[in-house]
Image 1 (tube, chains in turn blue, purple):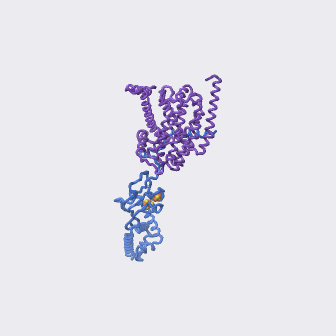
Image 2 (cartoon, chains in turn cyan, purple):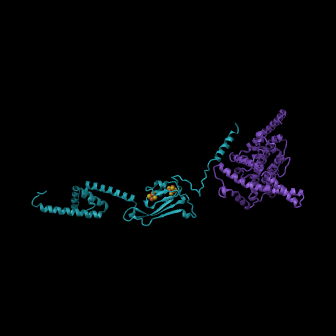
Image 3 (cartoon, chains in turn blue, green):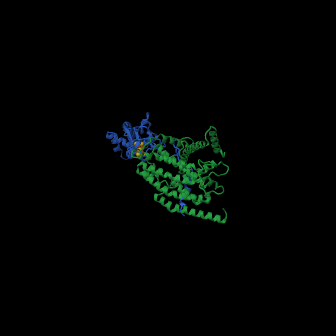
Length: 232
Length: 346
Ligand code: SF4
Ligand code: SF4
């Protein structure tokens, strides 16, 4: 029948008339945000390893940072981290890319500022944060790495001691002595391997010590053994 | 409570006569006072109505509507009115100045004139005309001229387009509007609105004349330029139609007049179809207000439900549906009356 649709329409609007309003009274009542709502981009300085993945993954050149070479090691030291937030399009690529998850979106969405410059967020290196205070995760990682290196060194040492030791010592005789020692004694081998990885100079010293000790032993044995090699 | 206003009026006249005024002059002064009261009521009422429409439309769309100024945002319209009053009054340089300036005044005057004949309670009327209904219809159609003046005077194609549309629409819809009221007139045998109200003490005419009620409602919506028949304004296509060039108070007058018309037409509808001021318990002037507001709410409901109709559909709906139906209603009513007489019921 003609006009049925009109009645239907009136019924629908009437139904909505009595339904609850969906308006959010925003400044008075804060809206409920979904857990993965992307508000303001936050950065945690302590976690960052200055790998640059975030900078590379950002399509809008929002992110940038400054580094300095750490003394002695190859690792970089992060000096400052800048988020020029006005260009961010909240794509989440940087957050996904960061290996140490130091970037994250929080629920703060009131980001307007009076001046354009104020939109830029610059994180400076917090005072008192030096290499010693590397994050525990970082330290553990380093330990792990070392352990692996030591194990590899030990293997190499046991397999071809001459070759490895030639990098450490000079005299051919010394090398021969030490390699014999290593092959006969597990403990010495472990210690030498560890020292090679950790501190070469010390390793040289220790190695020389071992060799001298061995020489002495031999010399004593030689004295004893002049009468005959009974003991051996 | 019932004769409150009548007693007030009598006391006022008596007071003036006691001051030594000629009774004829006292009547004239009373008339002026009545007019002032009517205009005041209209203005205050409009403030409430605009707020109400914004609130109601918001509720239909599950919004909150104005809610900042005062409780439930009731003072929002007052703030808007102040804004409109203090706005710059711009008259386009190419406009026909005289017509441009008189159009809104003409519109509001015509709208206020409608209140002359509406019975606002038992024996409460500005003037008790015995051709009240005819007066209402004829004065009501005069507002077309105001819109045409506005459209022509603005010297703007959108305005003219809106004016042309409004003339076409109002002329087409005035016919079913008048015809649908004829049935009631045939039953009561009078054009006096008080008589029409009194004739409904048993049955409201909405029961005796349901078809007329519906056709009148539709035609009235068109006459009022309200959605879904708001073609003359049609913001999306005509940028406000005849009102395009108007600013500040002149525009506000148009706005005011539209709502004034709305109240007048709703009051007439309540008078003619819903028993006017008749009702139990409450005083009569409260009943007419309640009924008028109920009809206004239905107008709001319709406006915020239906999308705007196309111009050609609008015209063909009037001429091909409403006019024949209202004519048929007259025929049916006449036949019914003769049947009644033949049966001896009336
Ligand atoms: S969310 Fe996207 S645009 Fe914003 S900083 Fe991250 S990668 Fe760049
Ligand atoms: S991806 Fe993460 S760890 Fe790497 S530089 Fe960016 S913020 Fe720092």
